[in-house]
Structure formats: C-alpha cells, structure tokens
Image (cartoon, rainbow, N blue to C red; front, side):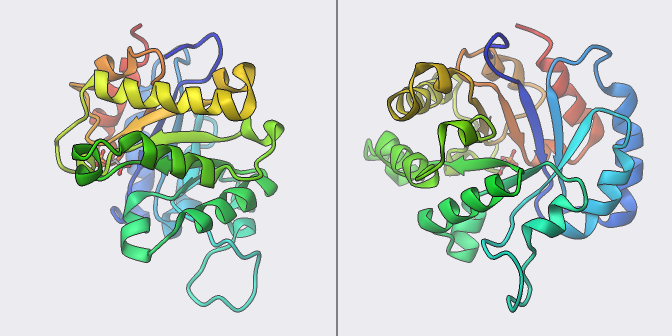
Length: 257
Ligand code: PGA
C-alpha cells in the first residue's frame, strides 16, 4: 500500500451467494467491526437482486456498494441483461468487470471488457477491472504478456482523466477460490509490472494514483503480508467476504503498514 498517492480498497465479491433477506443482518454485524478511523474504502458487491437492500443497509456507514457486472448496452432489447443506469440509479458506485469467472462462464472477451469499462466510466461508475493469468500461462512464463494484453485492451481509449476512476484487480485464476494464494512476492511482482505498464501508457503521475488490488484466496491470515507490498493497494475478496468477521479482519489488516 502507498497511502500517500492512492486509496486502499477492500472489496467483497459475493459472487452468486446470499439472498436479499440476509443483507441487512450482514451489514449490521459488520458495522461495529469497522475501524474507528478510516484506513481503507470498503465496497460490497452482491448479486443484482441484493443491491437495493445493500444500498439501504450501508446508508450512513462508509461502505460503498458495487455490481458484479453490467451490460455494455445502454437499454433496450437485451433480455436478461442489466444496464448501467439501473445500477447508478440505485446509488451503487462500483462495478466489477472482466472477472475470470465471467470470462470463462460467459465468454467475455478483452474487447467486451473494454466496451463495459468505457460504458461504466461514461456513467460515472468506478470499474474494478479484473485481469489474471491461468496456471498454464504462469508455468509457461506468459504471465506478464497475458496481463499486459488484458490491461491494455481494457483501457483502450480510456482517457487520463478517466483513469483516475479505474481500479485494477490482479487475480491469478489459479488462486481464485482454491485456497492457493499467490505469494506476496508473486503478487507484488505482477502488480508492480501493471503499474510500470500504466506508467508507459499514462505517465508516472497518473500511474502512481491507480489502486491495484490483489484477489485470489485472500483471507484474514495472509492479508497483512499481501497488503504490505508497495504496489498492492487492497483486495478483491470472494470467499472471505461472505462472513462479516472474516471480511472485517481483512479490513483491519489495512491498518497495519
Ligand atoms: P476468492 O475469490 O477470494 O474466493 O479466491 C476472489 C475473486 O474471485 O474475486
């Protein structure tokens, strides 16, 4: 973390878990465990039908809400899709884009992730753009090539001013939901390389302002070490964001430096 230049963000990706009636209780339990002084921005990203309850539950408690995806289209004949304006109208502020599960389950391409990133930025939402290599790509030494391609594609035609709103999440696919976390050194190496790429694309000043999160089996035990790395500015948390105490322990880890 480098608080001088950028925000630390801990975002919970609930994936396809929980039901609307559980949201209030979750937030009520989380609230008293949040640090008294703000050490990071906290974001909850529940499934769509839980968003209204989440927005209502976090009112007055310094927690933001985000969606896990959006349509690249503004409105109209797109059965089963959810538009940006539906999300912004609810007062959600973030949206996760290009998660590897959406790339795998729904065939989302880098070009589509770019279209969604541009749409989200146009609507004033903060995109959390996910990038990450597969196990085979890592074994073959293709990690940075893959990540650089994903970052460049996602940010195609994103302006320097828009970049200020972009959050990047480095999530090695082999570490997601597997309990197999990247070591702090592995995660730092990739996050540092992402920042170097941003520097090339946007200049040093812009690059140092971008929050880059790590995601992939981050938990209460390994969070402090991962977050102590200079280019890791927070976490995108799946499994460990589903229990208030586990999530709060990761948030608490941002107080250490
Ligand atoms: P995990 O998921 O923490 O359960 O590994 C992270 C993510 O997919 O965002």
